[in-house]
Image (cartoon, rainbow over all chains, first blue to last red; front, side, top):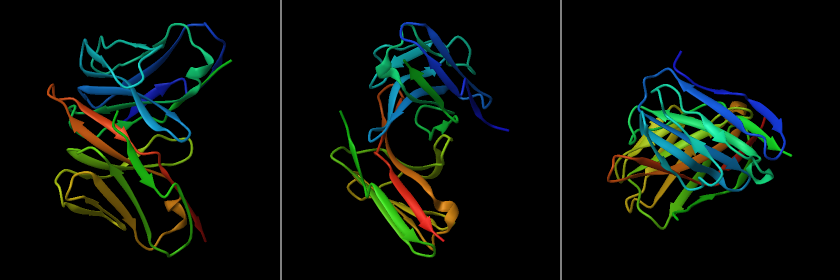
Length: 112
Length: 114
């Protein structure tokens, strides 16, 4: 089954404790992206990747890092999480950058 | 940055009624997309529109890409309880490096009374 898989689905942690949210897709998609969803703001892009080893900032990249060492994986790294990063996070992928993106089921992060 | 204005913010309708929602922008987009999000899940693509003026249907759903490329609407006919959820519009911009940045509206929350 074609899918975008995120882990964990839920995480409660404390300020400053490094965490990684993994994202994996099995569709051989070139383009992958991370979004955060906050009430009243819709989804906003954090980072995206056009292909392996090619990443770039989205609209809200501060406090986040990403890497794309393999085509299928695109982890989101919070080196020193803060409470304002409490949010619902989505990973998405598409075959190419200009095609509709398919989303994972989300990761709810709470930073205390 | 670019913004999309999606309206209405929420709707509470009776089963069987038709629904209409729309998105407007001050910017031109290359593609318009409509997604639906169910509780606890990620957005699922409903309809993709690629040309100004294009009218596309997917079952009871119909969406149009505005002539000016700055707006789009989504209609749902004969609503049923499983239509409940949050509907998002998204405009897609094609960058010079083949990027496809998505700009999302704030969402329309739809509730259907049986």
